[in-house]
Structures are given as structure tokens and as C-alpha cells.
Image (cartoon, rainbow, N blue to C red; front, side, top):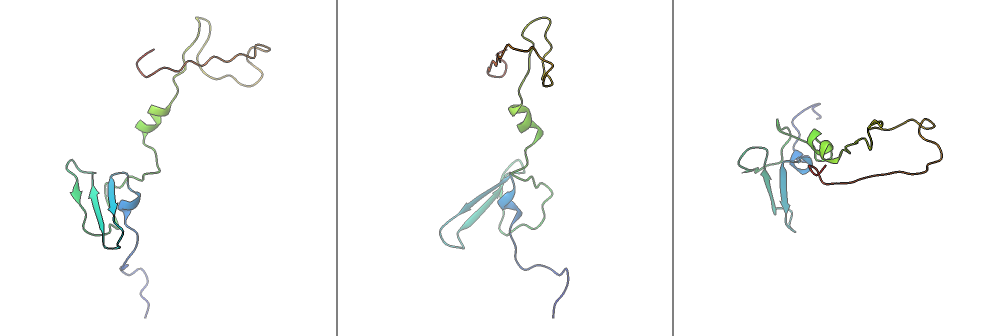
Length: 107
């Protein structure tokens, strides 16, 4: 007998791929502890999670993560505009690139 879309008996837990899940595993199969940090106080999760309203995938970057990685482009002089130029529209023959890297807030 086969029931379509019935209740699954096992499967991977969402906590394994969630950025708020802290998973500790021992050497034995029954040695596992999961702590969910999606709430203010992290709480223990005693079973594999199928659905979660606070799930956030680890591999997917947040807007804040992207803002931390972003480059800030500033003009070198008064007549220059910050940004990228299309190939062939910049100054020809200079062969010079200037990149100034500084910590955030040290402009």
C-alpha cells in the first residue's frame, strides 16, 4: 500500500542548512544537539524540523552581508564621476588603475 503525499517518517532537518541553527554532532548517530538562535534566547530543538517560519538559508546572503562586501566608488578629482566606464570610452593609453582600499568610516 502506498499513500501519496502522506506524512514523511524521516528526512533532513531544516536546521542543517539554516543560518540560525547551531548543530553539534558527536561520533555516534544519537549524539546530536541542535540550538535555534532565531529567537532572542536560543532554545534546544529536540527533533528534526520539517517547516520553520524563521528559516534563513545559510548559502543565501542577506542585504547586510552584500552591503559589507560592496565597494564604495569615489571620484578622484572634481571633474571625474565615480563609477565604471564602458570599454573604449575611457582615457586611452594611460594604462593606469588606481584603487584605494580603506576601512569603512575612514574616508
